[in-house]
Image 1: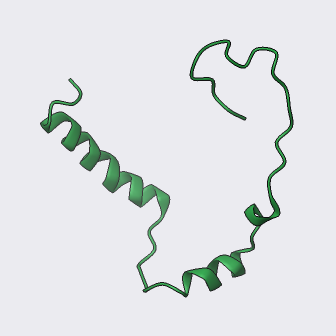
Image 2: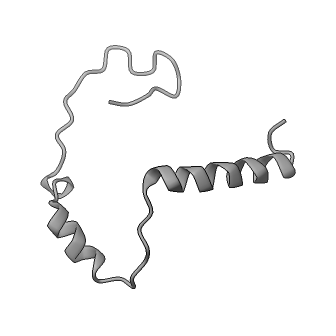
Length: 67
């Protein structure tokens, strides 16, 4: 699934996405890969979002990037 950046740009275009086998990895393979790097504490997505979004908002507001 994709999102058009210009409305109607993909009108009449069709196809099928076939994901490469490389995208299908087991949790064990991910853990083995992660062991190649220095240890870092894992955080859940929800705790990451609770930390990141307020920081990002402050940066954007303080720098007057958004109103």
